[in-house]
Picture (cartoon, helix red, strand yellow):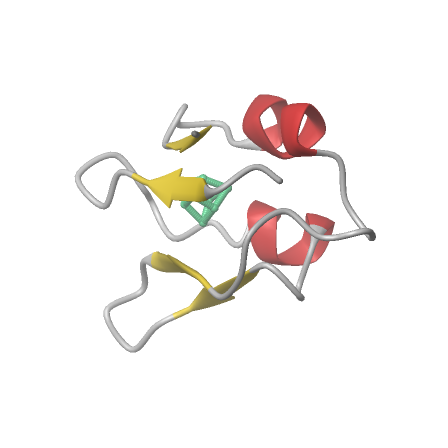
Length: 60
Ligand code: SF4
């Protein structure tokens, strides 16, 4: 199970990751993406990483 990490210094708050998987990511009041849970059955970890335009998402 991949554990997502968002680099808040890189995140632009575009919301793409939330659209890709709203179960794993949410935008906070700080307009940064926050991880809600580890990679779930509804998304592909590699796809999520590739979709982020800022390269802010990685996983362990
Ligand atoms: S896709 Fe990347 S830049 Fe956009 S909100 Fe998510 S982590 Fe931030």
